[in-house]
Amino acid sequence: MTTTVVISGTGIYQPEHIITNAELVESYNAYADLQNAKYASDIANGSREALTHSNVAFIEKASGIKQRYVLEKEGVLDPTRMYPRFTPRGNDELSLMAEIAAKAAEQALAAAGKTGADVDMVLCSSANMQRAYPAMAIEIQQAIGAGGFGFDMNVACSSATFGIEQAVNAIKAGTAKCVLMVNPEITSAHLEWRDRDCHFIFGDVCTAVVVEAASTATSVDQWEVLGTKLATQFSNNIRNNFGFMNSAEDTEPDARDKKFQQEGRKVFKEVVPMAASHIETHLASLDRAPQNVRRYWLHQANLGMNQLVLKKLVDREVGNDIAPLILDEYANTASAGSVIAFHAHRSDLQAGDVGVICSFGAGYSIGSVVVKKL
Image (cartoon, rainbow, N blue to C red; front, side, top):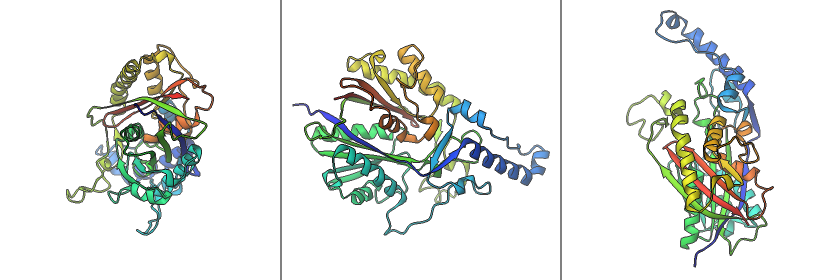
């Protein structure tokens, strides 16, 4: 007998601090002025290029982003620093990543009508982990009072959809009864705020999803997982080379390649057709047509990218009712983006409505989850 698996609850932790585009531009431009003054002689003799100012219109046209939430604001906006300032925590204290994951988990579990004691699998799936080990998932497991087991996953911006498939498979295989999948994305720590081409892209957040068998679900809002589909194809166009081998390689710890970097135009050109084809193929395997999908909760990285993916799928322009946007408020939140969209924009759908949660990012990686409201 096939087990029907549902998403029975979602949650979100949203940091209290907001950085607007205007604040970000003011900080970046002050940094650029300081750098240009410091290297004035090199700029004059042509051995170094002057940094160009950023502006709000450039950011919003390039991305659709208007603001972002961050865990720490002052360090990011300090033109002599340009990255967050976190207070170190001892090994006996709850880590920052586990803390925000536990807060998102609390909300998701409440929505699902569960407690931590009901959870027997915790999956921490994120673009960047705070440490190598012990696994973040095991610390989160302890923080929420869960049993069973936990482990970490990283598939960059597709970590959440890949994580949902692992949760679904665990329920179907009987290795877990109730899975908590969390996506703590502290993206402010790996973004290069000093790079005009990307200094506006990311924001911090954490999302959480409860996955279980329909037979054990008690929440009012349940979404049957009709199918999941994952795909990867290697590309260097989105990359971060920070890792434990850096010191052994005697490389500069603050080198540009140790934080987020991308070839944006190449990513746009290559990922859009891949994502559209992936979703179309997945829906076809379930005897569904893209035009009949009630809602698309897409990865929130770039407004133009999402619009073009949808146009290729349904052959027309669509608005927020079909493909809701949270990018303007949250910015790119890596793996959490499509889950935020699902969390915030599903209450108006009716029983029987079908939607697609889809993410795409570094790897390249693409994951899609087709759900139906029960």
